[in-house]
Amino acid sequence: MDVDPALDEATEQNTIALLTTANGIIDQLKDTSPDVTDLMRELKEPVTKYRREIIEKLLRHKFEAALEDSIPVGMMLYLASMFARCTVADVHFEVAVHGDSIVIYFLCTTVKSLHNLHEMLKSGFMDAVFTDIISWQTASLRTVHVYVTDEEFNARLSVLSSAQGLLFDRRLLILKLKGITSVTSNLP
View (cartoon, rainbow, N blue to C red):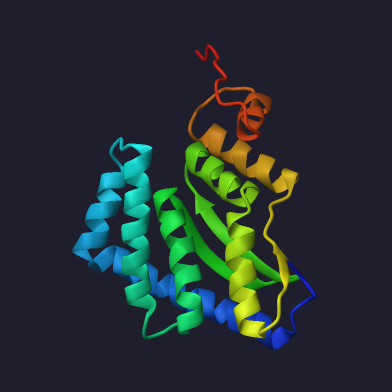
């Protein structure tokens, strides 16, 4: 994540602590709330785009309520939105650490979830969420860019594709990720 103007060390550490706290709360809720586990179970079945949007909204409300006592009110909506979108996309927030700025690790266990994360980045969703989180903390507007380098993306894609036993031309998948939605291939 790049932030302009750059954050001071204390704000970075505070952001990391808030993300870590929120992630722990959401993970616990996913394990203990029957309502949340039912919604997550429903996502494993084929559902329409409209139903996925409804599930995301329901999860966001559940996540907001869970974060209420531990996260500042001004940040609850942003964090709940990110965690709900990630849950629906089968993308798992893992950890945030201090690096050149704040480094965020997401776990994608399928090519589809990696594609979903790529779409969240490409659409500007992650930029908007983290701009709001950082700007709220600093009380000044910051420009935040959340990104993954092409090398990192291709390396993760390669690992996922080989781990799943899929043999395909990565260039076709990358073209699909760039907006071509009807790529067909005769895979053995």
